[in-house]
Image 1 (cartoon, rainbow, N blue to C red):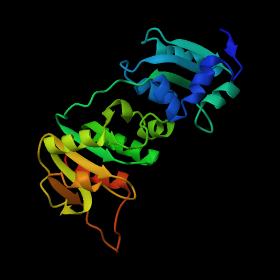
Image 2 (cartoon, rainbow, N blue to C red; image 1 turned 135 degrees about the vertical axis):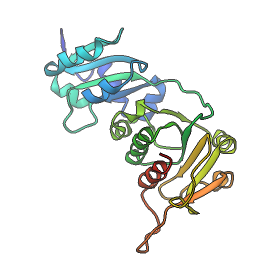
Image 3 (cartoon, rainbow, N blue to C red; image 1 turned 45 degrees about the vertical axis):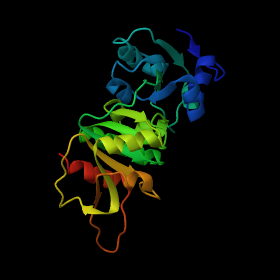
Image 4 (spheres, rainbow, N blue to C red; image 1 turned 45 degrees about the horizontal axis):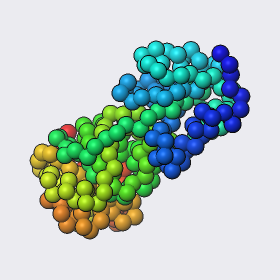
Length: 248
């Protein structure tokens, strides 16, 4: 197998461009790095092609044994470093097709994320959502769920929940049609509340501004977390995690 040593190779250039949302949107592709994420990724997510350093070729071939049609490219360590978003890349990266997800009414427990802009927060929320069986996540003006930082922060949970982007109007419709609850400091103490209802929709807001007023007004309920020692708020990922665990 020929080893690609040039960063100007057309497949390598495409992979490198996927660090930017613009090119993810244009191509419908995203990048997944590391053996664990790729092993956890369901076969329903299509791999277009995969890169591996010579030392990781056998691992790449084992991943692709269960999949059809994707080509494996051997690359030098320098090329892998140019593709990777991490300082010390594992040596395997795959270019995958972004799944097409429609906006459907949730059946069980769901989240509406309003303007969560930090990739680490978004990834952590998605990971906790999977752990708490919140199967549907609706993203309104959030960080891109297919950015490398979000994907790493989810530790594979991105592939265990159904994530779709929504407009403000779509978000409002979801809030009206579900047993919705905004997570906001003006609400009832969630630790004392009976959190019931189905489909249940928790709404978490932007790190700085919270849930926008037009959505907060439509929510059936508002829940808060008690604070001691003069603290006024928690990190959105922490607060959302506590709220979700109240439903288990």
